[in-house]
Image 1 (cartoon, chains in turn yellow, orange):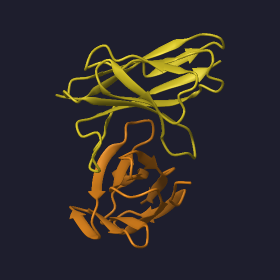
Image 2 (tube, rainbow over the protein chains, first blue to last red):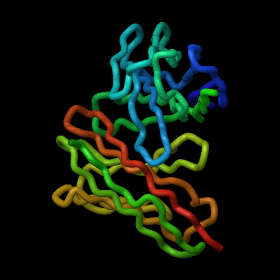
Image 3 (cartoon, rainbow over the protein chains, first blue to last red):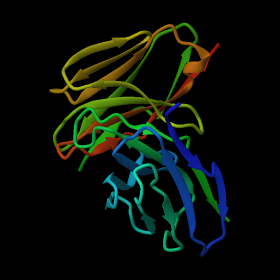
Image 4 (cartoon, each protein chain N blue to C red):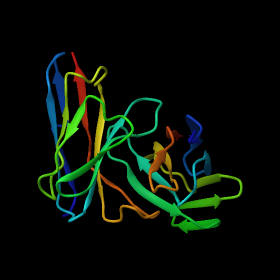
Length: 115
Length: 109
């Protein structure tokens, strides 16, 4: 079955450490996205990529980095520069970026907790 | 600024009908989405409206009024499995998605 796989599902990090969240899709979608979800807030866009080897900052990119070396993969690194990284991180993909009817398919999420 | 408002939480009874409202103020409009998200899980697509009117899909319907900047999601014959958060999102003039904070729906027997 086609879908998006995020790993790990739960991750604990000490302050000062970088961590990388994995996101893999087998939907053959061109576009991939990383969102952050905090209680009481809407999803906030961290980074997105519409094509291999290209990506753009979203609304809250500071303290995060990404790469898009393969169409299927879009890993997110949460660096030590991110001041408040404890959150639920969602990866998504779509095949219609730049259109109104851009339906996103989401992964199951990764919950990061900073100790 | 861009803003989407939804009630934070609603409670309804199994078998009943509930309407979840969403109002938006965005830079342009290219469509409105509803997603369902069970606790700790991925959001899943429910509906997309770009023209005014009602779209029905089984027990779920979604309504849009562009002139009023208003949408609602109507859930009929509520089941316990409908307990979830319902996210409203709008595509703006730059085709960026603006998300509401979500409405947590609690279904009671």
